[in-house]
Length: 497
Image (cartoon, rainbow, N blue to C red; front, side, top):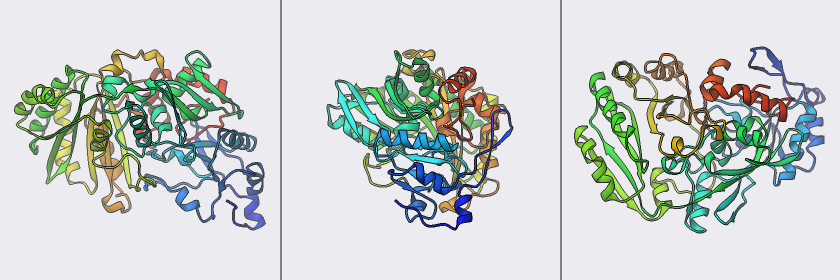
């Protein structure tokens, strides 16, 4: 796609300088680049520029609270195209980011700031099977992969519940889903990755080739290159799965809420790996409406026998317990009825989100303090919000060694997401970010760990580095310096060189 004509002055100053704080908190300005130079080295590629008819739709963010203007968006049709755009960006000192599904909570698939060169991977859709291994190009979304695998041998992978999330970032930063307690995170199923590096070359990283890069890609991939395909080791889909919801009473006191959450924790702490049970809730008429939901990988009879005691103890009721032999039907149930393969991107939402990783049972004092804030303050805030605690453990910690990837939270117990959106996608309320921040700090005043797939752009450098990557940061930085010494692949929370 050709760009619109600009005046000579605008052509010379096509990309505005913008600032990005590095890990040392020193400001670095991106180089001024003329549109003519960008167009010259991207000749032959499918490119859209600011002002082109398709630019607005291609540059829209999933999170409508944020808006960024890339220098250009390239839609590569091949690995060779990806190599060419990376070589071009490196020669002009343009930051490069890749977008797989476009669901980055912080808009990092568009650069996280103005002026990045975006590689939109949506045309890279090939999936091939080689025995039990699936080679999946990163333009594919989770629902597309799940549908293909089921239709071609009733195979499956563990992954998240939103069908339109892309395989690129989801795999890179973990890739948790209900089946993970049985089969690991999605990154744990990766056998190898084809990746275009900062010098434009394409290599295959695995445990036996570029093993240091392979380790880094599984936990922090977008900082090191553009992964054009993942090779996953698939599994036979579970013969029987249950989708369930359990409705609990509305809680109007911090004591009653803390008691319920404590009983949930105690139960799931020793639950079999076949059970994936989340504690999900939001504000409800000045109190908290709570639902337990998830999957059991077995029969409905086994599920009800397992949870009946908890349901009675919590004075709840089983709302749904549907048994499926078709793996794709339970995935649709997990997605609240959204079909696995549909055209177009997810509709935008105006929101702010955070996360908290816990490693053991939360104490009653913390839970009561949390419940007090949620009931007395958050439940009356001018945002729509939910909190969901997902259960980790099982195969995630028992069957995959912590040293196998740069994912820092292998021994997590719960990963809690805090999500607040505006009403009807109106402008985000001025106090909305503070309300969500205090949802976290009322529970954990000094958070030490968070999940990077729920990325929070408001964290300081020291906060995101420690919370997302922990003690792996020094090694990650060393590998970054080896494979991307000029920091071609950079965005506000990319691994520092």
